[in-house]
Image (cartoon, rainbow, N blue to C red):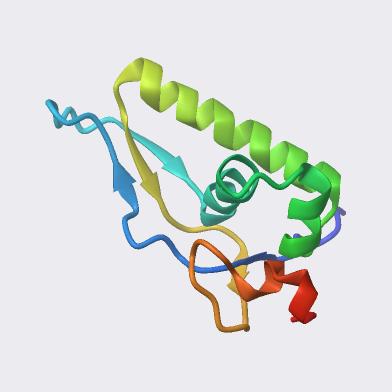
Length: 113
C-alpha cells in the first residue's frame, strides 16, 4: 500500500479557470489541477526553480518535477489540439497567509513570513 498523498500548498485559486481558442467552442477540454496551475505559475511566471517551488508548496522536488511535466504536457495538448483548458480540482490547501496572486507573502523571505 502506497503512502497517502500529501496536500500541496497553493497561494490562491485562479480568478479565471477556463482558457481556450477564441474562434471555436468545440467542447474539447484538457483538465488541469490547481497544483499543476500553481507549479506553472511559480516556475514559469515567478521564475522559481523546482527546489524553491517544492519548498513553497510543501512537497518534495521530485513531486514538483512530476507535476510540472504533467502540466506542460497538458498545455501542449491544449495548444496543439485547439482544446480548452479547465483548471479545477486536485489535492491542495490554500496558503494561510495574506496573499495576492503575483507576490505571495510566503515568498517574501526577507520578512520571514
